[in-house]
Length: 421
Image (cartoon, rainbow, N blue to C red):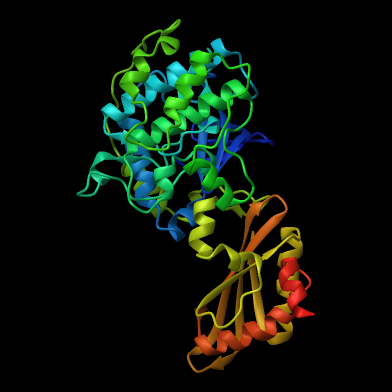
């Protein structure tokens, strides 16, 4: 991760962060982007992670960022970190095995250091200029110290298609066996070119995962199929372990042990504190091209009941509410502004966030409402509204009038539409 101090333009087109020129975007996540970078003195190519500071502060994720940096400094392995580009598409079995061997080496090493990645997926497996696989993005990683008294982790996180079935329950899970499951999904994807568990409907997807409902394509060798089935075992106590994978006959073909060259880094998080305590003028800022995206776990935590997102909410809400829309985000923002101004609200916009400030003084001062548009899918957005000032009852009355001006952008299910008739 790069500190965003000293950001400046290099020429007319290139942005500079320290001694690195910033290039194209390589990937995007919930908290920022990964961009291509080039060291101006050595010409070395790197991946620079630029973090959305306001998002991190709002979600109180500074400690998580510190943990990610601490983890990266703790782990020095030839198949971890320092990433550039990723290959895509179906690979031959030999190619897939080579990358899988490097992945298992990295995961085995991380586990030996008490680090559990918890978000292993192809997007986080990149290649350096020599074609060596690198594991990236330890933002959701956990350390052994985070285990509870039962020796298990209890935070559901990761990307749904790659998450182990036990992570989806609320009974806790072992970080090592959960990472092994994700490795099995990755091996399947590398060899098949598609996911073993893939359903647009989340409950259906979770059922597939919990039942290990998948079929290996006919071009998989019997040995590879057997290993994948041992990895994608829904019962974690019966799932194959990393030591047994390392001894597997199919896995051992052409196996090369990792080559360690670097010395361990010394951990120092002072620069992280400086970044999140610095003023706006010292930060890398860029206009957002689209709203923040929500992963499935964030979506569930925000809506609690998924049905509420796709149907117009009934009854009372308290200090916040949300609705879904299939309209483009700019149209949603414009419609919110049009609906709020006639009700006597001043509108302050920044990217895909708005603050609606009431002119009249109520029982508890001026009513203030914060809104934000989130991307759930390319053609589906969630709009969150929450009271940040004023009286809750006045917020209810405001929303009743305000929502009538949004009816043409709110997405309701066919069943809900029939109920209106």
